[in-house]
Length: 404
Length: 181
Image (cartoon, rainbow over all chains, first blue to last red; front, side, top):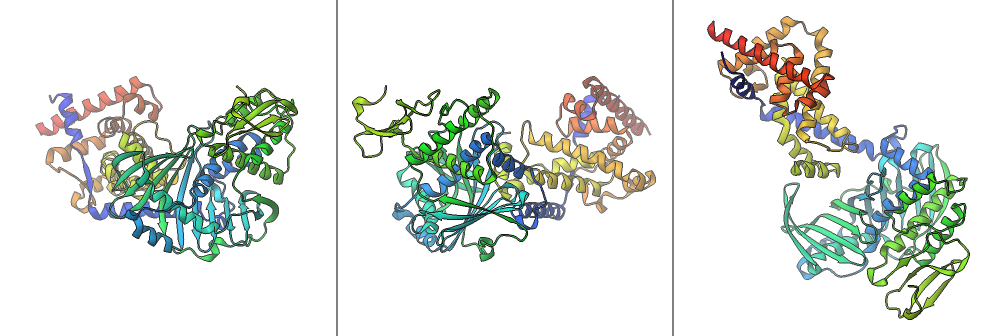
């Protein structure tokens, strides 16, 4: 009798193999399914009726005070990645590529955010830019925002509620559309000032070289194809928010992007919500507005326990469980505006460099307490620090008089 | 394992190359799995294609907690069951028999080593009760543990082990009988 293990060995030899044509056909069908799937994800006007999990997350986010904070953390990393790198010059080693880049009329890339917030998965956004100043951001579930930076106007579509938001964007920096190309240019020049050379690895069959640069509160890891000097992948981590990161991939230049993609015309049958959006760099004033807003949410008028964007949603969740918030009676429009306020405040905090020695001490302090400093930081180039007190007044304080 | 995690990570971020790499890495193993579970070899191709299409469509929600091969093998096994259920009424047993009798060269999916003994073993495997056949194939070609197979079949681990043992015994005696003939 044949021993059992011999039968097992024999069975393991029962290998089936398909011909190259079959593999080509099957893989072709799979890739076709992928294309179809991608189109369904990023084609909102044609699939408004479809309810996806991604949109559920977004919808829940927009309707909940707590997850609003998590969304803020997700969105700001994408926005920060886009607007952080301004100016700067590329090195001569990349001059020819940079020149080509400068001539590019369109730019596409994907940003995948990670917030390290439990229950808040990373958000994948597709970003498209077109000269002279158009921008389109596609989020899960068909949520689309289009901006015309020259006109200072924007349009966001909320398919689930058949609503659209018309935005009037004030204080937008000059040449807003061009800035995104500068972003890429700056990123590509990072190898010249890299703190760390990471060596080589493979991405999608391409051998790429990695460089890491820590600057201005962020750690950037850039992977570049040395043969073409093309950007392949960029990961941005925020030092003030551990676990919060954004990964940029799938960079494409000069793709054919029809003007219709950037249309500010809302779809038929949609109702309008009008919103004012401030396009300025986030500032101390935004933090103060957020602190005021938060203290209006809490029953006892206290400030948030933390300003770490990665920890804030969790802390807020615990406060909800403990019944520390009053009832949420905000309208859809107010919710959107509050999300913007939270986002801008978090942007301000996340962009503060370590040298600013910023501190937050607002936990358990009530709004109106003029004696207690709740936040202080030293602006770049200033001999004094800015101190925000519990009544939200601000004073310039010399180092020897700073709170301990 | 690390490579698979990286491929999935890349694919989740929209890399077609990562999807191609996953397909190229596992397609033949999954075809072997499906080929051994189904008598209809063209159906095996359909099953593998369906598994990859489904993988593509659910990638946003997909989280790799164990081995990618194990996950895909489980998907193939589930799809094979569905396929058999759908085709049970439409395809008479005699058709299946005819399918097996058809020279393998006419099928796009072929046994890699097509000796007489292996052909007999393949036939003997398809004569086994499906649960035993599934257990053996998932264990030896899917590299699944008995615990995982048991969970999939909704039985105890001991039952899965018994199915494996009984199946091997039957194959052994069938093969010995064939040899004696």
